[in-house]
Structure formats: C-alpha cells, structure tokens
Amino acid sequence: MSISFCTIASGSSGNCTYVRAGDTAVLVDVGLAGRAIVEGLQAREIDPCSITAIFITHDHSDHIKGAGVISRRFNLPIYATAGTWNYAERYKILGKLNPANKMVVRNGVAIHLGDLQVMPFTLPHDASEPVGYSFTTDQHKVVIATDLGHINPHVASHISGADILLIEANYDKQMLETGSYPAHLKQRIAGAMGHLSNVDCGAFLADIICDKTKHIFLGHLSQENNRPMIAYETVKNILLSRKIDAGGKIGLYVADRHRPSALITL
Image (tube, rainbow, N blue to C red; front, top):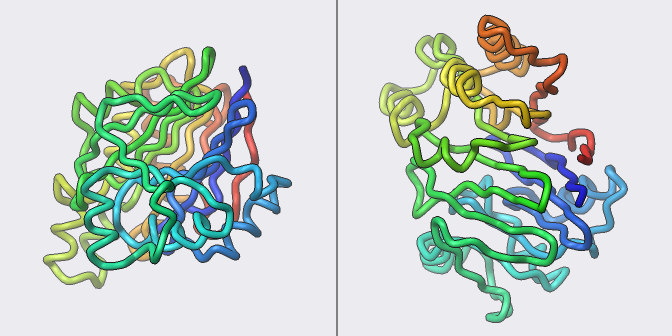
C-alpha cells in the first residue's frame, strides 16, 4: 500500500505534519491556528474533512495549541501520552473536547488505525512524556522525531528502516554559542533533554541511513540559531563525507517554517 507525507509547518512558531495510507490520514502535531492548518492542507489539495485523527508528540505550545480547535471542528480523536494529557488539561490548553476523542498512547504500544500501524516511542526532551511516532504499512515506514536532546539506542531502533524521516536539525552550534540567548537557555537547548544540532543530526543520519531510505526532512529549525542553508549544507556534507548521496539518490530537504512541503507518495 502507498503512503503519503508532507510537512505543513515546522519550527518553533508551529509544527504540523500530514501522513496518509489508504483511507487513513493523520496530522502529527497541531501547533498552528486552525485556519493555517486548513489552508496548508488545501494548498496540497488535501481535504481537511479527510483527516482521521490527530497525534500529539508533546505539550509545548508549538506542537499542541491548535489541536483542540481542529478536533472540535472536524470531530477528530486526539492521541497523546498520559503526561501530555495531564499537562494540557491542567493548563486548559485544548479547551472543551468530546470525551470520546481523548485517546491515550503509550511508549512501545502500537495503535492500529485503519491502514496505518502507529508506534509511539519515548524521546529525550524536557516535556511531559514526549514521544515520536512511526507510521507503517505493509511496505513502507514514515518516522517523525523532532524535539530531542540526543539520539539514544531506543530512538535509533524506532527510526531504523524508515523510508521517509522527519528529524530535528534545530541549531548551528556556533550560532547558538555566539548568539544573544542567555546562558541558561543556551544550556537548555544544547543539553541532553533539549534539541538536536545540525552536526549531531548529520552524524546520526550517516550511521542510520540504509537502502530503504528515500527522503529525509530536516525539521524544527531554530529561527535564531540556525538557517535553512546552514542546516542543509552541514548535514549534506557530513553524509557526502561518508559517501552517502544525499540530495541525489536520497532526497534531502529542509521543512519550511511556514509553508507546506511537497506531498511525497511512495
């Protein structure tokens, strides 16, 4: 069965990704206003009414703030960890929801949703029980892993074998070190529970890329501490140094902060 993928937006100002297999279409994170989500989908000729469910990675506002609006508008279930739900309900982030649309996911426990198998996996990030997700069909695998301070064996095992991967390349180390952020924020970003740098992203990709790998999206770039071309060239050069044809045989892209990517179908 074919699988389709595109990013609607990716960055600290808001995140949303679209995955579809057969009649099952999901959004991963809704960190934008409802109108922006609808317009992004329509820009790729995707009917918002065709969405089956929403999956949330964690409770930070750039990933969750629009989920309640979209859930209410299209009567969609929201899947998230217990930690994310607890935080969202404590601070009333999602507003009033249909109780039937509250779905809890757990690390390593697969969800079978129509034509997709969805696997949540724990990520090292300073949020309340954050996860990434893999989406698989009988032939293909899409993985979304952003907002992670480092790659550990658990994360690597879930990313392994992905046909399409959205992975974080959040910051350029020199830009972060010499930038205007206060010291405590720099330490948080570069820490083990913060975000992944361009160099660390490239080094990991060089180890994990396999014959199945077809498309890699670099996502969640910092507006202050990164630039799309710096992220792209840093990762590409690391891969080329390992004789991996990124940008050629393997598609390498930077997910845009505000505009949807091309819709890729395998």
